[in-house]
Image (cartoon, rainbow, N blue to C red):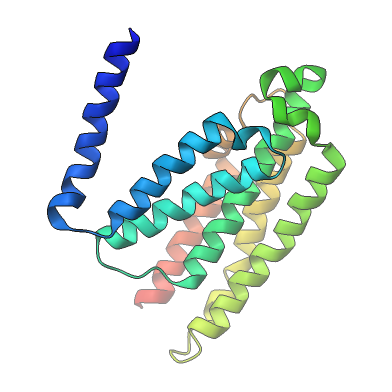
Length: 208
């Protein structure tokens, strides 16, 4: 594809992306604009800065949440934003860990920023997030649902969250022959069973 055709396709896609929000006057256009700017900054500069690269990816997830919420006229809760941030950081640092293990000495050739990371530090970050994420979820259970009497029920699902986090950590750090831990995660029977069971459990708690 030529550069001229690429710019034409890009302009057309941007037009279709912005048109619905311009017509409806939705505030989601600000999230979309910020997301585009973030992606340009990430592709040209931020992806080369240690830690900032993963934080930029997490910011992208947050902008998707705020944009989607604005599009349907719903204000996202602080708990949703916090959990989105923590889980995206866990996935991002997990991917960096696996890339170091998978590519070994060739890791910087695959991604330049990897030469600034170390496995002990990344493992420490992942273990810290494994500790923080369930604590935040349990805090959400007791604070956000203290009035409807369902707070203790939500805490019963926290072991499933821990199991999912441990399984992803295992896929990230102990499966060097796997090219992508996120793809393997979606194909892993244990992870999928745990995730589906947790979703069913939460839905039952909310609507029963």
